[in-house]
Length: 78
Image (tube, rainbow, N blue to C red; front, side, top):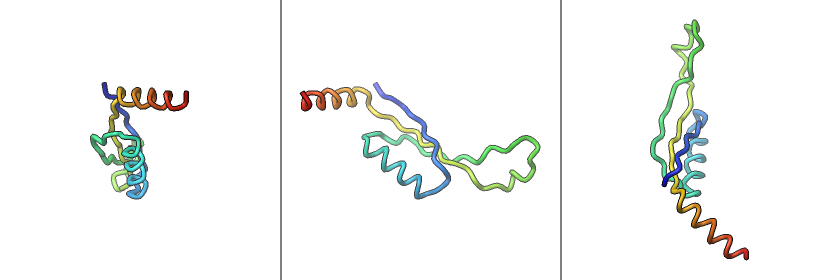
């Protein structure tokens, strides 16, 4: 069974790199990275020229592998 997560990351390539590395270190599989523009407020005509946004990072991890890893740690502690 997989556990999915969606993280929002600021529109900064260095921060995105850190976030992806952090997820990979925990054993997560990156499924997709999507850039999305900032949502405009209704009636804000200047938002059409705004180039800021954020990244959505969609990842998944194997929930069963996490359980096995936790059981293995518990045995070493006991």
